[in-house]
Amino acid sequence: MSSERSDEETESGVSEGGSTMTGTGSGVAGVTEEWLAAAVVKESAEAIVVTDPAGIIRLWNDGAARIFGFSADEAMGQSLDVIIPEKLRERHWNGYFQTMATGYTRYGDKLLSVPASHRDGHRLSIEFSVALLRDDAGQIVGISAIMREITERRNAEKALRTKLAELEKNRSGSA
Image (tube, rainbow, N blue to C red; front, side, top):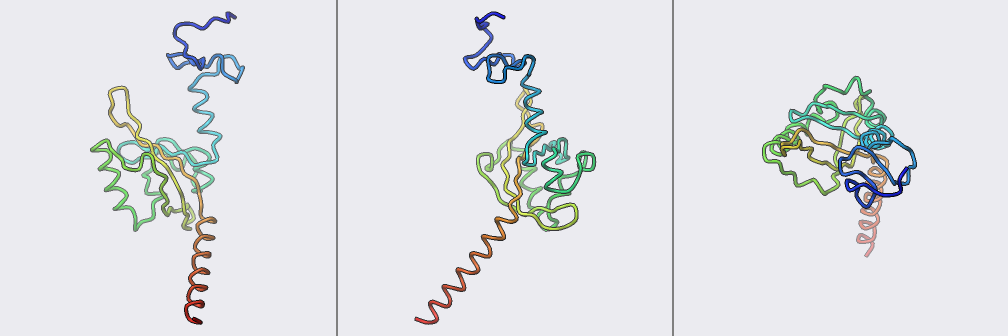
């Protein structure tokens, strides 16, 4: 193997064509960017979900199955409604379809916290970020969301706020 880099390779050793990782720390011949991307999605503890422009689930990883209780086979092809609480659906879809129409989301670089629904009906608290997925022509072909379940943390924060409010009330009542 030549130690010289081809003109198509970048400083990082990733070929401009994006097909093969070379000169990276992996040391594994034939590991492609596509393989790495698939491995990250599969092995991530976070839920990684991709929906098409109509809001139909097209990718659902093992993290999503663990958090929401639906297997990939059950979730794929379904509306995102399977995890959106009913009372929030209208608001969600208004924003979703506006994003599809305009190509803009104000949430692209923000971490959002919202309630979600588990398969068995119990409420979850999740944080997530989104990315618009565009084809080579710049058309939106979907939205990806990376989600983390934070119910335990959210409940602890709520209990702490309640305790703080009680202490403040007691303090102001005795003054």
